[in-house]
Length: 215
Image 1: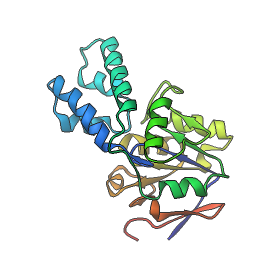
Image 2: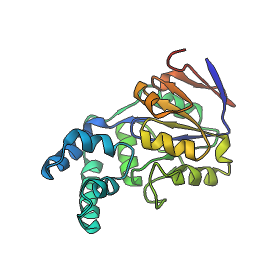
Image 3: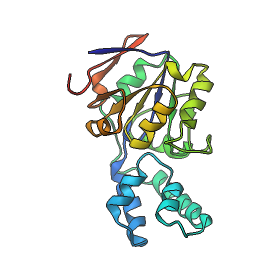
């Protein structure tokens, strides 16, 4: 068991609190096929990032306005399509345990999408939420985590970030936080610690106690 002091806790959503892979694979896969792109490549690039930024990388000669329009259509579809969304094991218990300490959701989703997915998973959006609407740069930029720390009035270096994606983990590390990767695949992205899921995390009011993979 590892004990980690936590003055504030910053949580990603997709892949960390909520398993939305079924929806993302379905909708982004459909978009990829419509544009003649390799579905696996598109899905791998999309995880933890805003859709229009991924589109701009995949289709560099395409007008930005078309990417933004496609992204808006995808967001509308994602808000209404919650079939298959479930809680990452331990998410509800962890959110309940940290209710009285500074914490925030930091996601590349918009606030309406975050509310829809959290609701579908039986979770409540924290009072402090930094979404795609609140920052000009998405992960791997640390902007979202830095903004959340500012709103909570906590030094980013005293925060603990929970993340699962390459972009999210890079963002948390760039913010100076201690980063806990969620899911075995997160180990490939260099977080400070990795847990299988959130059932491996406990909070005693001051510190997080985790059971990292491999220990």
